[in-house]
Image 1 (cartoon, rainbow, N blue to C red):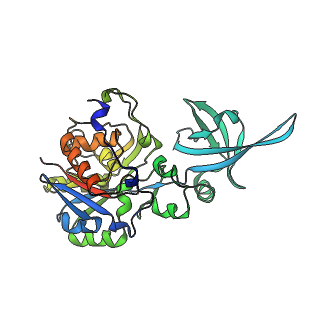
Image 2: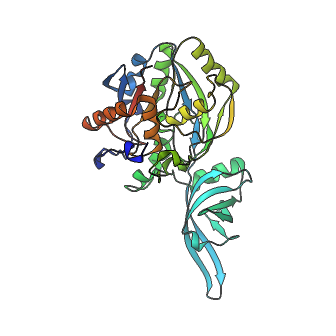
Image 3: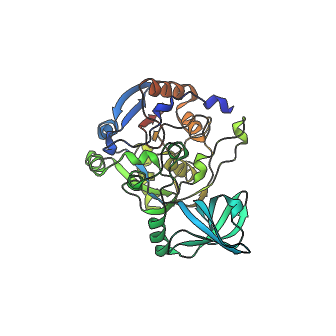
Length: 350
């Protein structure tokens, strides 16, 4: 298929720059059995069935955007340059992959000072990205990063306003646990404690998995033939206990519904033979029309960018024409789009 098959026109004013408050008051487009219903996220306990199981990504977004200073002594005396860093992912050698602006002003071996506690040295440069080694590790690093860093808002929000203190709460799920993501699993941002309690009372199961969302989720597709696109890899984990819960739900004939494309990609990676198993490692699964879903029976997800890999994923789940109709309805009814926008519950016909 061609990239243009996943394009659509989106009015600029439908891009949300702040979330709904309270979280569960966001609108919910419910697409099931050939119909479309306009609801709200707080309606989920009535929409879902007892025995359904939601799969929730418990990754925690780190404040991955840093502003620092490179200091240098030379013939002209002491000089300094402002350096902006966006952390991308931790590497096996203990360094962090990062986007550095301006990269040309930082030499290998030079240090960037972010705060009185946090510094990093540039170790190598590869494919336009720097590999930084920080002076702190573990909890000390987490604390210093929380103090010095800002939330790495998606480009379509960051281009409209800077991140602020509200984003440190807004751009984090209420169950966030495992630090490592540089983007939020945004469908999960709509859940609050009251909604979780109502779902549990209704008899809807909830299972936590981990997939650290990387900055690659925002990378544009640059090839016209989508089969030539190389998907970015992200690290994930499904524990034995989580796999057992999902397997029991499937065995009972009940539905498994991931909340967010990250949770969907992870469970489908771990269940390609039709049986869900524990998983720990990287996945670069690329879901496009024609994909055979083995584990997921539906998906709760926000509205995605035109010509993105996530548009390809929802088109694979629901069908290309059906998704076009759903998105046309969402635009006509003025649903809010992207990370801080409204949500959808997509249940394909089997």
